[in-house]
View 1: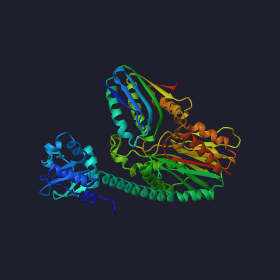
View 2 (view 1 turned 90 degrees about the vertical axis):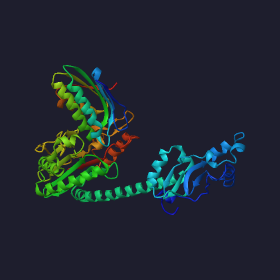
View 3 (view 1 turned 45 degrees about the vertical axis):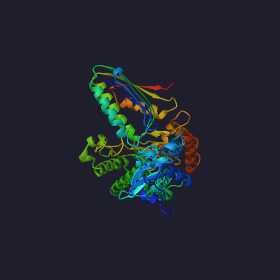
View 4 (view 1 turned 180 degrees about the vertical axis):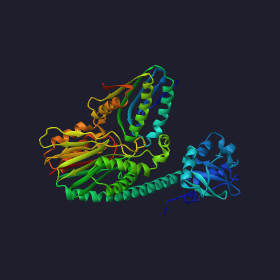
Length: 127
Length: 403
């Protein structure tokens, strides 16, 4: 399966979904005018990828410093797709990276861990 | 030009032209006589067939023997056979697209204007650019004027709340700063016989779409508040959830459309609170919005987190029930709430969020000051934190001291 790569813009994060190596990453900030339009293709690509998984180890690296409420909803849909894959027997590790001083992002990661029980969410401080 | 040009016709200037019977010698003479003439249109039987660019022409004629060889020949030898030709009725906007498509040509040579295919004159790229700039400026001014007026409307429907808050609370602060003149944040305050109801609301989006949402929410809120007791904030959130979902037509469409981007997935986060001054209690229900509380005998701010469920979003169940938090309020208790615009704002060197921790530090340090001063300090610290980063969202901050 191909790699989905998008460069970061001031309003959208860098996306690097290396499906072949089961390494996915999101990095930057997210507050596009139309979050739906940005995330829908990612959610679809991720859905197709997850459908092909069978007892696979997947690593997801997320380092987001800011996302607006529309992006938050889209991210939940995205993580929901991963969570379903986790529930089907895949081992999905999400490295949720936050600045040591950033309590907002850390808290969000802790909430993700509560919400998505089929994901192994590891809150990690950015070096 | 007396008025802003809107069509190619408005940009037309009369200019000397030649026809194919003119020789290159004659063209050279014309260019020598009219020093400022950048180019010469070539017209055959009233119809433009090409354009001679001064610089190209002069450099061609300066080549050895060219004057002798081409001097007496027709001037079509060095003309551009495909200049930009537009009808006088072409709008300035369309003309600018055509000029850009034509590459450098229209920028150096300008363009030929015709009426019924017949030559009328030429227009210069400079005039075209000026016209485009004027148009954009005029459109921008018009848009800003309408947004400023929208702000007058939005501010005026906050006025009653501001006044009632003023009349009810001796020591309070209400900061409302939309990111883009108008916004999706909004607050509400109503005095009641035994206390008061207050709300800070953050509707989806900011700017004009955000402001539209505040109107939808305000209308739902008004209807619900008129027909319900205000001392049960959680029940109010539930009723507004139902009402707005119906108003936005989410029920009939369901999730599919919203998820494919065709329908609206809009809603609000909010802090709703009721203070019973007689019983000295506070009841709070939050939708993704926290309430901060500092009792007089405490050294630390308590955070009531609120439910992690927004109001009226597609994913929010129609029958969702929010939680009421009830606390006793001794005299001197401090209560604050804010939209996520403060907490989530990116700033400082590392580009990280302001966060609840820093906000609470500020509030705790300023606990003995009047609320207006607390608000100023929070905003000063917040603005310092933001630094040169862009404001990400609308900002609202409410606080009061319970007497």
